Length: 138
Image 1 (cartoon, rainbow, N blue to C red):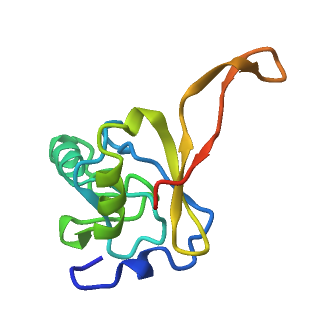
Image 2 (cartoon, one colour; image 1 turned 90 degrees about the vertical axis):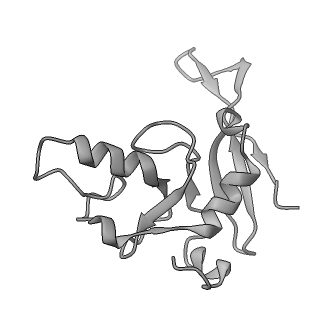
């Protein structure tokens, strides 16, 4: 998304879809939210992690592909995503507490908690993660 575009266009048609606050490349909190210019998903990745990993990659056929959808993604086609960046900045420091961000039809967003519920067990007796919706858009 280029500077000057309206934030609301970033969530059009993506209601109910999720964005994880951790980079799919580095598995660390996303510092600079980036996405491919032609990508249709909402998951972003960290710009610096993407560049660093691709510069070190030996396999030329796997270099410069989107870490989310696998499409060819040359450095010139990577753009910053200010809407996602704003949300991630709001969560800064709490990334470990948030499993995902969910986009709602009214253009608001909420989070799914990653906090483990010690009292809840799954069908197989294993402890599970509790998914709790927390609205941080107010």
